[in-house]
Length: 279
Image 1 (cartoon, rainbow, N blue to C red):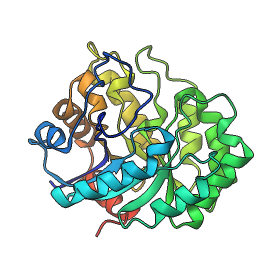
Image 2 (image 1 turned 90 degrees about the vertical axis):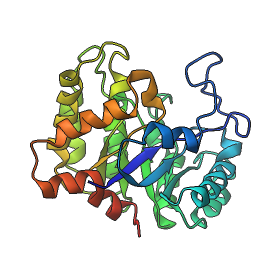
Image 3 (image 1 turned 135 degrees about the horizontal axis):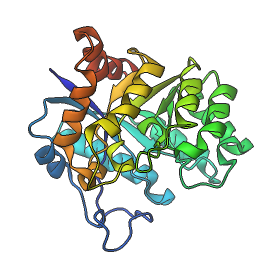
Image 4 (image 1 turned 120 degrees about the vertical axis):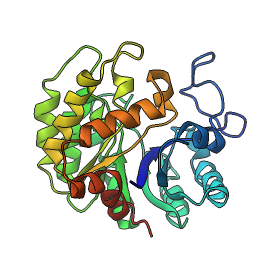
């Protein structure tokens, strides 16, 4: 089995500013390409997609340039989702800069952490449409309680290709299933979006989660989107706080164990090759 990891992060706290990292937290250090290679050594990763790490807006282009350099050290890095702060005064220039980079396939500007209504702000919607005009997709990072407005964003932008990260981060820790399941099904009914099954273990209790409680959400998302619109992603190194790479990969294999070979290949490799336009 050859795997495309559609959601890998690396960060360098000496090189780039990450305002979200709290001093003394498990994430308050650099996580390098070499760290990723060690963490995933037992997993047959054939290709990977780097996803921006919510660096300070002034670092967005620098981050994409840095990872472009890392791809020379590990050519498995075959795509980048870059950050562009769409409400910034220089958003157009930043978008133009990242769109010119050969490995950039998509753009992300996190909805998570923003005030209600952010996803439907006129300037944000225009920015998302500008991403599509540059030939890139827009990647969605949000929490489950922001699904309503994000569904409306996707509906308003039928010309934009969207990728939903982490199944919209359902509240697994408290076992909340509705309205997440109904909303994820509504989201999946829109034809211009696909879903990464990733990042779920960190929405559960980090130290006490059980496979079946996480798998319920993974199965619900897979059923809603169908085999042609789901992808595997690790969300490393965020998953280190909830068991690490290998434990998440085992959970993903458990999810796919009941599928036929064609659907397993789609989930772990084929859909990612199409959506990220991997060579």
